[in-house]
Amino acid sequence: MNRTEILLLQREKVLTLLSENKENRAKWLTELMDIDDEMEEMEAAKLKAN
Image (tube, rainbow, N blue to C red; front, top):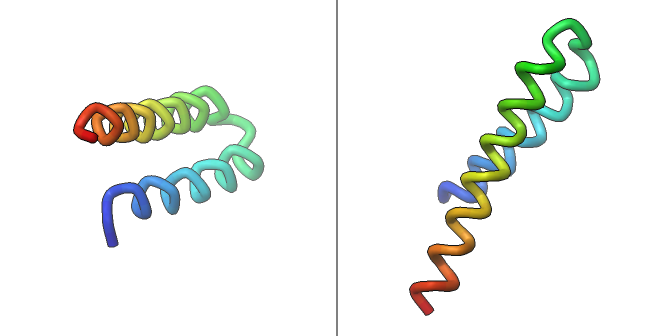
């Protein structure tokens, strides 16, 4: 399993937690943004390498 697949699984888990756990909404939104940022950085690095 590569890093992108792991991040996608984490993202799905965070989205589920976000919908189920309203009291920690800020925490899950922050986690979601971190995952998305890392995925964007990986994509930019991939494009730069090609």
